[in-house]
Length: 114
Length: 112
Image (cartoon, rainbow over all chains, first blue to last red):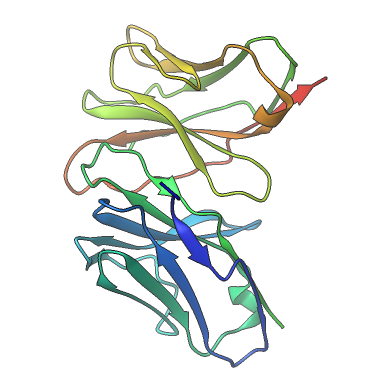
């Protein structure tokens, strides 16, 4: 298995532009998570999907952030408009779904907003 | 979920066992102990988890004390590639408890 796949690996954009991050979870996993990591705040959960349905988006910073999971093999995290404070590494993780099961993380997307 | 306490940093010689401690004195009966690590510039990696019994897999062993208030992750033969931040996380297994709360973890440095 290729593991969780994220694209792009690096993204540099200007303030105000739209940014779309993509994630392909591990086949057969029915839970998907988006995290953000910064030096100041550490690793934070943004949103959690189960069976393609958003269950908890309480970690999404504000309305500029949105996430979708149109099918079991694809999810996007969109920031519109982007701001410099959105600069971070964004990780996607998937899990087989039972609460005690482990989460498998992708390599992350390093986003820089100038 | 119960709070965990880990040392900020540890050193280990290559080829030796690395023993990483974690205190979770407020753990409750249905909470699991998970260990993840994050190698520099990579995503977190699952290592092992357990509830009451000691666990072993191809990566590590997890020793949980009888009162479950602390645990130790053991890397039996540390290599330079094991240098990473190691996170001990306590989380219940209930249906709504999917969140992993990462603290600051322990920076393990394996020295040649």
